[in-house]
Image 1 (cartoon, helix red, strand yellow):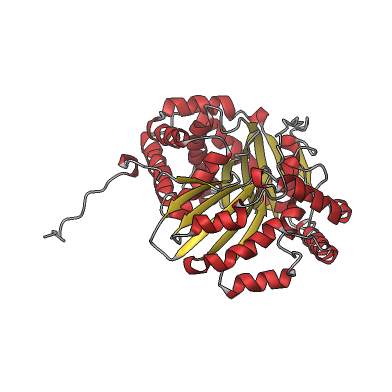
Image 2: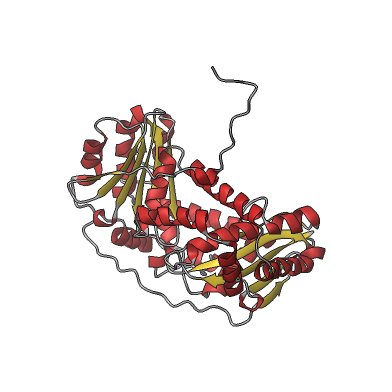
Length: 427
């Protein structure tokens, strides 16, 4: 019998051995790979189709995002309203997103409704018509949204810091504009769709409680033909042209009570051996609620409700970005405190107690990310789309558990130098 008077032993998260559940791989008749993680916990499933159709591949601004959005807004058989009604009738959710490298369509539904919803998804992927009326509505809505967002300091700051880091003509630094929305043409969207949403460029990621006939169903709707033909896409290496000036001040809202602070620098991508090490140092610095930036600038100084540091994980390049919104009268003081914390990490060894806390936080976060089939398939998707395998996952775990305070100090000396950072305040 359990002794309720005796507290159970406390076990550090770093003592756990994390295992990434392996996927099943199926191949449809036309060659489309299907990566599967099964789970019987709930009667739901997640189906995601991924294409190399992000902004990286566009030759006209905003075409990738507009194409991805409007594929759901009308086929040769049904209008946008009818497609939405067919999806909602089954209590399902069909979402689409376009990122820098890839574009996705994700279906969440009850397991029992998968067979009824796959024909709807097939229409969206194989038979979009890009109606002029829908394009007009989309353009108008996005221009109105842009006009509102341009009044927000944080939105303006995000646009500018990416331009400084990567250059305004690079996909990572390119921003939307009223002129670009006005220039969108339905024919350009159709051409982009035909060129990038092809069967041989599709990957499918499937997770959840799956019906027994799910692979035959996928084969029926997506694997039986070579839809849109075959097209081999080359990923061009585009030049990064960062800004020469490092310090910027922008006045955006004369009536605003707070400003947006961004302090950022370029950093190697996830294939660099320092990337996983830097994730640990970044967490200590500004990557969780108990970080040094939060303890100083939020808790002690009261300049902001929250401040964070993140590592971009883009494919070609990465960046360290420290971001917050603070009272406009303390923005300059916030910048000074950020640099103070950077210098402390260079000058002083991180205490073992603090490092142990961060190790447990990071391992605990990964444990949470592996809780359920939907989370596991997302881990695998990120690895597969970046040409990585499970060894990358386990090497990251090993780095978190074994990196020393001395190694972290050397990283800080290498990557936390003030002169390498772009500094921006928008008020």
